Amino acid sequence: MLQPFVSGLIYYSPDPHFSLGLEAGIGDLLLDNDKASKDSIARVVPIEFDVTFRFSPYHTFSPFASLGAGGVVWHDFDKKSDQTLHYGTNRDYTNYILKTAGGLDIAVSRRFNFSVGAAFRYSFSDLLDLNPKGDENDGMITVFGGVTLKLGGSVPDHDRDGVWDRYDLDSRAKEDRDGYMDHDGVPDTQIGSNLLALTGGNAASGVDDIPPIVIHAPVRRATSGHEVKIRAEIFENRRLLKAAVLYRPYTVRRWLVEPMASMDNEVFEARIPGVGVQQVGLEYCVVAVDEAISGLGYSGLPKRPNYVRVTGKEGWWRAATILAAAGGWSTAAYLVNRSQKID
Image 1 (cartoon, rainbow, N blue to C red):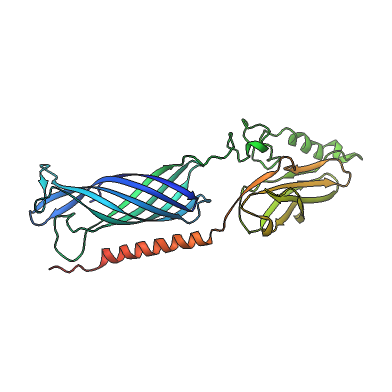
Image 2: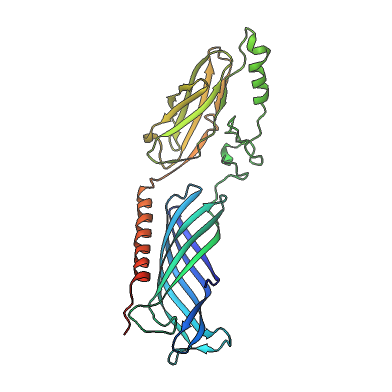
């Protein structure tokens, strides 16, 4: 029969893929005390230090694996009379435990995660169930769901629109996120009139005084050493002269240029080489100009560029997560399924 089990975890994460934590919980386990022929309960309080590996912490869904060690305190009593049950002279027991756990983190927001998973704890005692017969110690299996609140590690982005305050024209107004001028962090004011001009009388006149319109969803995160694909829709009422991506690592002053190639009519694409994608961060702008030099269409400007957070390569962390999960749960499966030898 399933019984409620409550636990809390405090952890420190030096890297999004890795965390060190302290977990404590309390719960009742239903037991069958064969010696006394009574139904009994073990109230257990496990406390352990955990090491957790996360497979893909930058995605909405991220598998994780935990390994832990610590101690457990438990007290056995009869569920009907609350009378203490004990083996020998001890009323309360303590011993060491090992733990393996795994599950799935679901990112609800930047600060909140919802987690589901299961854990197996193996004690170094055979007295949890007051039945020390056999050559195998006792264990506990728990299935859990919970919410994680992340503290600290904030970035200077007061309106939480993905545009850092140093690039944000208005840090109190969230970005529209429609791809038009998405570097500035304020509601769009020009796109309506510009699109009207593209489709109205100015488009049919002999004067081209409307700059290209760039629709681009900024890239917010990339992996160090991997090329970054930049795509944008560029609309021009006459003839487009040039479209390009200006980029640079965050600590470099000189801008580099990567021309954009037309993929499908208004869709243009460029790839920033991996050598320019460094962990210090990446800045870039998408710019377009027409043959009449009527103005600049852009997403990001050199003084206010799109900023990309660049993280280290994830291969080793993902391998560590897989090894931790495979090692912990294969051991747990062996302990649960092996046939115990009864003396």
